[in-house]
Image (cartoon, rainbow, N blue to C red; front, side, top):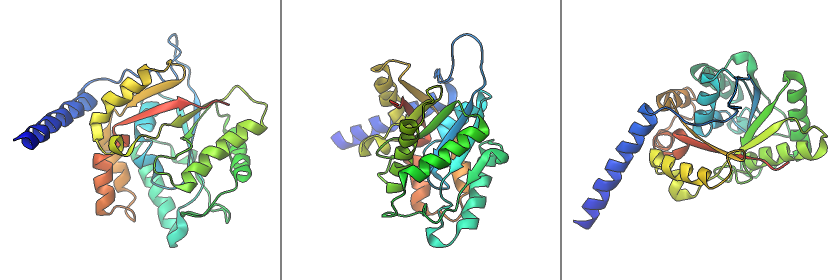
Length: 256
């Protein structure tokens, strides 16, 4: 009887949380100066095709809905399995679903930036590539993984350290840098319920240092991930349904 009550309570909380996501407008104020709208050139730096859909879709949907210029830099075509061109095209298809302009999506197939656990990336090389992208696109804001990289994947972590290396080596301080906060394993798989915990976390830290962004279009995130047909196996379908990253992103300012 006790277990039945717990399951029933979690089901009710799940449904209530999902309704909050679907029907309550987001109160996030990320990149909002509170006075007049200023369009920003934002660079999202990811490691592999599908990172954008699996982890960053709440942020992408938020930025696109508010008219910011979003650029995506994918440092690998995810070609450890020999399907680089296919996965590159899948990324473009997913970005089309997310309403990201394809001319603002850049993928690399660098011999020193190959996908896979144990494939350690040179942080100076990553920093140099990021510097080129910033200069070419007039970037105001960078968003990337934090030092754990959501799943602990070494490529995700190397992207973070590459961004940090860029700021360590540059004299520019006019560019904002934000990282996606990695959560515990429990929070990672409680789906929309995590919006309450993420919101509580962000409230404990000054707004200028953290933002909680609830996904305004979770169905779009699901459809975007489905474009990665080579990766669209049962456990990723389960992940995109249960993962808290489908429903909410917490962004934390990187200390440069």
